[in-house]
Length: 497
Image (tube, rainbow, N blue to C red; front, side):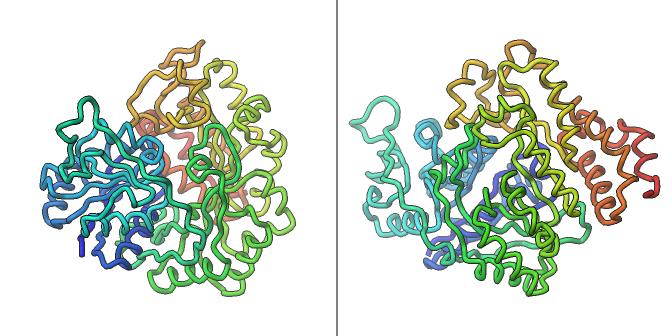
């Protein structure tokens, strides 16, 4: 039996952690499958706990794991590598493993540049990781383990290049492993989650889980990493299996807010409506937060009351741009007026609408930023995010943007720091333009909060505004609530009319 420390790296950009704290669902699934294979997994969410590298070192030393494994997206990859380096410094015998989208595509670069990293798990890890550990325990044939990458020197057990090799380390990438067909067969280790760590800030006292009902996306948005990772495949859990998990989480662990991590949960109308019906019939009282596509909201107009009755509270729709040319460039396959209509429908049915708008393409100007802001106000989502374009090195758009990329520091690929410099704007100008969009949009929104008749939605939006000012990257730029001064406090305190 190997003890495996599954660690979420301590990366903070004031974006994903601004609204709440939630478990790393990838590690929950990996833990379940490691345990089923006879290993001892330990989940350590250093990001949520706010632990720094020294605290992480102490935890690794105390746990004495045989293996330390982590996962990372592009912006958190440096933090993840720091963790693995620390593990090797504590005990060089610790096997280090990383997975996730960035490592999947950039495994060769990572392995060549980071001797602290032993293995990359590519694609889904539930079957691959236990098989890798079994091969290591048995002194087996690593190239027979599908879906991994490693330095060739590991074949001889040295962990380094063999003496006859010269130049950069040679990387072995085994053939990809097929995606898991039966998602109902997955075994998440929910009992290993430290549930008291996880909550949604705008619902005080809540307990928040991340759940997954599908994997994949069959669309081809040019800036997206997910459709490339999943190779545009799409698989579904059965409605019964998924709803049973929601009920289990609620009754066993007190979960009352569940965020769907699916890229596209509503693709199959019949299946999605059955999920809603099962939740309604069960009487389950759990708020659901999800992301979906504009066209599905339009398709489901007749059943949107079921969304709300089943607990759907907050919907993010992928709008991304307010002009048709940019939408077409992103391969969104929607029309601007469709996006506006979808947001109107979400709002009209008492749910919270959220979307984002991408800034900073090479042709961006002050005038085009102002057009985006004006149209964002016309779309009128409850929450709008103005994001710097972040061209992943493996994304379809990277080729056309690479000449405008100003930094190779992946930690800045977080949507809130400029990575691309428009031809007609300075880095400082595009950075300030994004902050100005936030300030103007939300100052305009808050003036109308007192007109919201639904007391729950009004309170939700007011609390969200406060949370955003306290916890997000905007705190640094807008000075927290102090710099949106008496005007905000006046509007926040006005009674509903």
